[in-house]
Every structure is written in structure tokens, then in C-alpha cells.
Length: 540
Picture 1 (cartoon, rainbow, N blue to C red):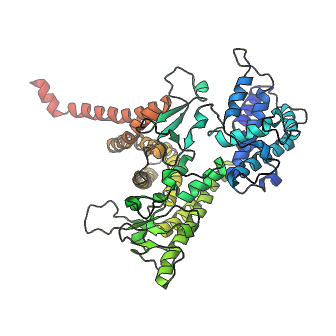
Picture 2: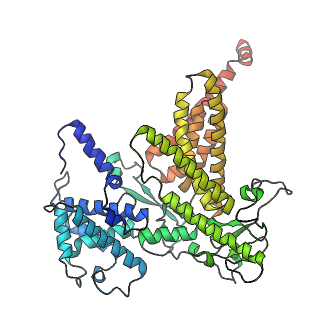
Picture 3: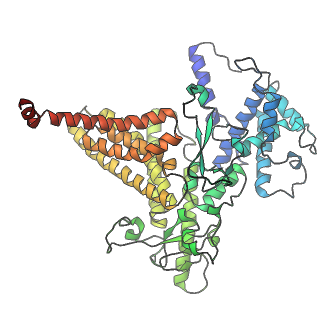
């Protein structure tokens, strides 16, 4: 209903549209019915989808004069998978819990649309048709809104986009393909239109007859089994049964590499704990990459895939021992079993922390800076808890490190901008900056090692691309030859990935970072060429 009356008003309207998902106020009574922040975020997306559909259905036309939401388009939308709405109002005994939850969330979205929409709006008309629908007629036009919300809930990509073919691609926790948003710019589309383009690309060799799969998990593809399952259950309403999520049987020879590799912890048999926490040398595993045969090596145990601690027995390929969460027998065995419960609790706490990040905050700049420091301190505490409980190879440690890394990379740029104002302070600032950069580089290297150890088909750059580019940019920005060479080494790691999966704009960024080193190297060679040796060659 907002009408722009001038340039400032137009900017406000555009700002409101771009932040609608974040700023849309959900009634407290509605929020109280949702257990997870992810469900609240998804509800916002469903409300925006419903409102957009209602607006487009008002005979809106595209630039070429054709209707945007045609009968054919609607037909394609409703051909996508969604639970049968005929069960939503009656007997749902034959439906699994995930399907029931999907329907319940969609019904809650319809109810919220009713509460928030104007009585004279097209959205309210959609709501009224839905509420007056015959519960037994699953294909009724009157069920249009509920079916739309179910389609959105089960098929939408990040940002709310739905595709007739691409939305049919199934999920796997070890996918062989990647969906790249925005296209690659090679088709000549302008950036505004290419944002609605998504391209399916093979991430590895795919055999004839092999199913094409993608990940619905985002960064949580690299998390442990219970977190992946919880994420899929809440956001996509199904339990995954891909090869990565199925436990190896006792008879299988590859037992040591099956199970929940992302959640491996120091073996409680090989490395007994004194209380809840690991010994410091076990906790940090500083010699993990050492070639010294006498170096201290930590033995890791892999949990079975399971949702509860009791289902996550540990198997250690080094000692061939199995640790049970609830063992019968000695006190030593019970202490070893407690390590599984400690790990399980730590995972839950870290996931709640990560999933709840960025859900609030002040609009005041000083308050934002204070909030940022507070959030960083909290992340540091969680990192200490996760490392002391689960060791350095557990997914929680890498996720928290990357969360802190993101904040560090953002601060590096502002720090470099202030250099040159005070020479005495600059020296101290640069010393601290080099220390922080070294910590980021070490953490990123560990994340690459961890991602590779999961034996996934995806390049680790699929997860770590942005962090790698951020670090390389910082190193090149330092200006000295050594730092630029180090930055070029990092960007080389993701160069091939960028060419295959990133949009043209990001490919240019990667090339620019690498070219900065090449220019610096050329300049250095030219300076050396102007030395005494070159002068002697000229004289001869």
C-alpha cells in the first residue's frame, strides 16, 4: 500500500522490499508455535511467496505485455511435489511425521496470511477461497493457497526461487552436482535478469544411469549426521537415507571409513579423559600433519549415524575398539561412554548457537560494534567448549572457527584502511594484524584438511570459497611481495572451482587477485633488471 512520492521514498520502499524477510513482524502467538528459528525464517518466506503470488495473479503483465502468472505457469507450479492437502483437514494417520509437520506449517502460514492481510486484498481472497475449500477435493482451485505454500516449503531454493525441472533434483549428503545461482554471464544476460537463473553443473564424473543429486543443506552438508537430519526434517520435511547416512554393517570391510566422519572425536579408549575434558595435547592435535614418526598422534573414533547419544557408538580403526554410550560393566567403560554424551550435548549447543546467529541486534552503530564484540566473545567460549569436549577434528570446531574467521576477515579491511595515520601505532597494529592473519590461514588450512577427509564428491572450495577469497584479498592488500605471493597461492586453490561454478563477476575477482601478484612479480623483475648487472650488459 506504500506509495513513493519522491526519490527518498523510493529508496525506502526498495530497502523495505529487500529486507522484507528479515523485518516482517510475525505475531508472538504464531512464533510460540515454532520450535526453531529456521521455521520462523521459513514462515516469513512462505508469507512473502503467498503475497507475491497474489500480486502476480492480479493480471500483472511482463514488459512484453504477456501475463506473468499464466494458467500454464500455475500448472507447472502445482506439478511439483507437495503433500496431499485432502489429508490436511481430516484423517492423517497414514502420513509420516515429516509430512504432517509440513502441512501444519503451511496451515499456520495460511492463518498468518489471514491475520496480516488487508480485508480487500487479493491475498485475503486467496485465504478465503482456501478456508472455504472442500477438504476432500485435493485439487480444488479453492486449495490454491495451501497447495502453493506446500510446494514452496518442499521445493524452493534459497531466495524463494522455484523451477519446474531443477526443483525436482533430489538431495544427497554426498551430491554429485551443484546449483550455481545467477548463471555465468556468458549468455549476455544483464545482472538483474541473470539473478533469476540457476544452472545445474556436475561436480564430478557422473556415470550413465547414475542419479543426479544436489545438497539442500548449504554449509551444514559438512556437519554431523544428527544435525543434517534435523536440518532436513525442519526445512524440507524428510529424513535422508543416502549412502552417507546409512551405517556400515559389521560384515563390511570399510567400517573404518563409514559412519559419521564429520563427528569423529579422540578415541576415549586410546586417550582416557580426566573428567569431561580432553588433555591439552589430545585436544589440539598440533602434530596431526607432522611427518616425524616420533610425533604424538591422536587416534580418532567415528560415531555411528544416529539421532541420540545411545545410537552413536564409537568405532576406533586404530585400536579396533568400540565405545558404547550406555555400557554394562566397569566404571572405566562408563567413563568412556560418557564422552559420547558430552559430544552430543556440545553439538546441540553449537548448532543452536549457529542457527540463531544474526536474528537480532540494534540499529545504532555503537551498539552494533558492542554487539559484535559480545558475539565474538560468545563464539570464542563455544569454540573452547567444543574443542575441549570434541577435539580439533570435529565439525563443531571448524564451524565456529569459520564463524570467527568471517568476523576477522571483515575487520582486516577496515584495519588496513587506517594504516598511515600514526607511524608508531601502525607498527603495533601491523604486528597484531600479521598474527591474526596467520591464525586465519591456519584455521582455513585445517578446514580444507577436514573437508577433504570427509571423502565427499564436492571440491572443498564449495564450502570454503568465500573465506579463501577473503584471505587472499587481505594478503594482496598488504602490498609486499611475500604477502602477495602467499595470497596468489591461496587463490590458486579455488581458481578452477571459480571457473566452473562461480558467476563471471566472481571469476573476475579471482583473476584480479592473481594478477596482482603477477604485476608485483613483473615489477620486481624490472627493478632487478635496472641494477648494476643490467647496466654492464647495456655497456657491452
